[in-house]
Image 1 (cartoon, helix red, strand yellow):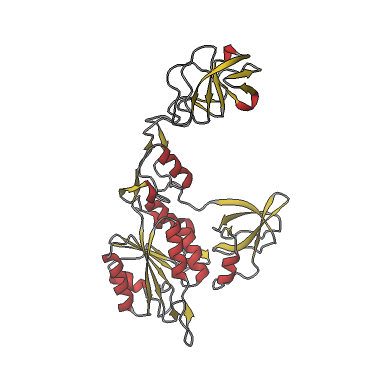
Image 2: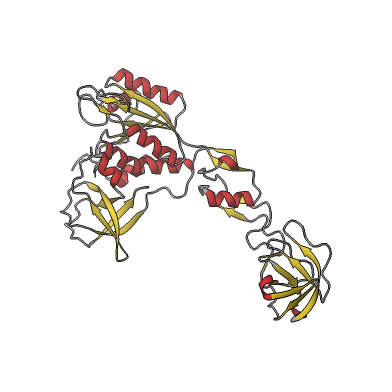
Length: 400
């Protein structure tokens, strides 16, 4: 159909010219979810010396089997002073440094101790139960790459490498605006013909999960002056992205194209070949990226998943920016597709080790309950042939 931008082309335009935001340093305690702007290099070696991995006795393997006197003790943070002489054993605990002269650890369950003497029945292999110096990481070696998101495991590594602060990209600043005379805030009693606004809260949650800062601008009526004032306020406040919900279609009350024209710009695209979500538009307003999402809740969410998410990840500096597609089998048959790329809400089941995606029977883009129950989107290409149950399909999992 003429005039509809393919999904891949629209995504390329959304990402065009978008690069990681500037670097800033934050305390490691405040770095959860942030994205490294440069590789993080270890400031220390771990373990800093050979250490015991078990509770037991440090020995020279060549001395055993034998009964030996216990010549001292080594514990984590309290190393044995001096060097171990031949024909002796050192009581040692997990995490303690291996005494000079020892080359193995025998666990306490494998010995017999009487007073100051300990009997070893077998000869251990050299290196037994010893964690070698630098086993985990070494000073000066890069361990976390630029573009990595700092989630709990990586934060633990950064802290162990002795970083109190880390270099990260600034968070994307996103303003969210709902448009429409029919909308009221949650908790408000709707009047005749009105509905409760839900898109903005869902969009703000997506922004925060992707590491951005969300600012809710509220609801503006279907008036050009009010909409234009909100857009200009967002730009004046230094937001990187303005996400609007509603006002992007073709009705007389859909004003976003007029707003873009008033700002001296043109849409990068308007209307895309996908379902749900055809009335999507994008424009660059002097550095403020305006992403005009459809007003229908499901269409708004799907467009945010496919376009806003990747843009946020690109601005945040991440390496993994595109939604991950997986293979599954269809739970039911599907008719042939038309000219638009379809994203069908579906449930997922594991049937004999095979992932099965079953679309809901009704896919109306106003049905938020179905969206809440969905676990994935089935992706169907334009003009896809009819498919039978059990045939392969592509899915994008939805966060649970």
